[in-house]
Image (cartoon, rainbow over all chains, first blue to last red; front, top):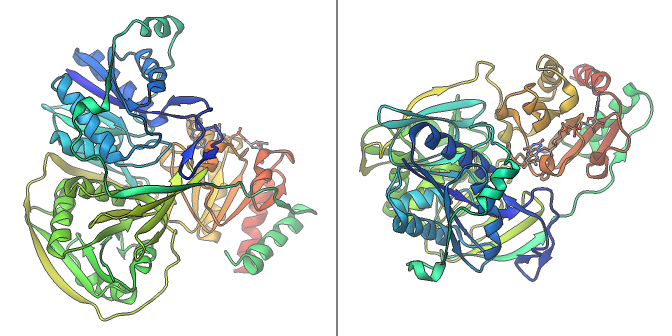
Length: 255
Length: 315
Ligand SMILES: Cc1cc2nc3c(=O)[nH]c(=O)nc-3n(C[C@H](O)[C@H](O)[C@H](O)COP(=O)(O)OP(=O)(O)OC[C@H]3O[C@@H](n4cnc5c(N)ncnc54)[C@H](O)[C@@H]3O)c2cc1C
């Protein structure tokens, strides 16, 4: 099977984000593979291990995203394509077109995995647009995946602890959620080997993107400060709790 | 005035409460409530009360919309064209975000998910970037755009209009390769975390699944849903559907009570926009006390039962 997995290079979830200019941020932070993409990579690697074939990671990002691409190569991905773009927070419509063109140029996808959302722009849509561009069905928030009768059977979280069991035809695009699997940690020899795996680097301009903007523009990014030191309650347990309930009821009016 | 389509999510017993905030955000415009479940008449009264003059009974030429999210999205996209909508919006629940993403892809129109504020007149929205560490403001200039709203982002407010039901059968059929075989519901009938207005959460010191009963008892008095930290979920004390945070649910209740949580960045990523945050922790130096509204230094196993008791006495 030819399995593609989309990966994104994002600031570490523990990093503090410093806004720069109107709608940019300082890149002097640690970057990681988008946490949800870890589940996507693991599932792609698992499927190919069972079915045979090849796993190809596709990333749209700045040149520095090569580090994240390498980290995917270190956990079982065979080779990668990095589509280079200059923007910090590119439009999902553009990214989806770039991913689609890069995949089409490379080969015939039997399966495409991606994370359900990225933790930087939290767009929650790139994989849907990618599926649409490739003319494939898509299911997201997937917590269980298996190949069955020439198609795939998946489970997706749909709220209130409920799960939908969905039959999807192949090829298809899958948006991975936490719970799908246990991502493996790279071992040192694999990290070294990953440095020798092929990475094709292309410029987004060479892909002939038809629609370079979506019509929605990020105009301002503002930091949200933490709320600061709490008002600490004092006294015995009963006293503290009674005071808390009074505050929540009468001052805050949230009870 | 814009023509706005509001997708209506149905719950076990009719229109979900959480839709009302979305209708409120759109009220004052020409609002079309879009109902995929078959029972548009049953939605008429409540949709009208919150400002929707048209309630559209949406159907496909063949096939039931709830059997395939792909079919439902094609029907929504067709409705957007049929009624000349400028905006399609809806609740940013898991199903809402799924449906709107599908619809946006079909319409090749821009979409902003999980918005925390929206102004349909100005065409601007606000949403989180970097897990609540920053707010991003967007300007939408496309002739048709979509957005989903984070549950509890807008306080519901009545603005009654006379509502009529219109039927629209979209020229779509077939599952598009995506077929829902079954919906497995949790037997406990848990309240959906993201839509709850009060949440009480347990962290690593909960120590077992059984101990979560303590929180459920308190939740019953509060009318709250129960959440868990990743540490508690990964230790097997609670299912992932209860996890709040970076790799769990994003919630925005009016009251969030954190019991035995250290206050990690990744947990706060999922609950930072709560109106009031209360922490209960044995360690007076726990980082959580540096970023919440009210703190109690104490053992959750002592404090929570007393809280339950005090709430019960008050009722
Ligand atoms: C990529 C990534 C994604 C993540 N996603 C999430 C996520 O979605 N959600 C999430 O929650 N975490 C997430 N984490 C994990 C996060 O970093 C923390 O490890 C986790 O939130 C800690 O959980 P906790 O607060 O329950 O436990 P701890 O950090 O262990 O804190 C327990 C606290 O309880 C206090 N305590 C101990 N006993 C008691 C008692 N009897 N009564 C009262 N207080 C007591 C302690 O003083 C301590 O402060 C993620 C991490 C990464 C790297």
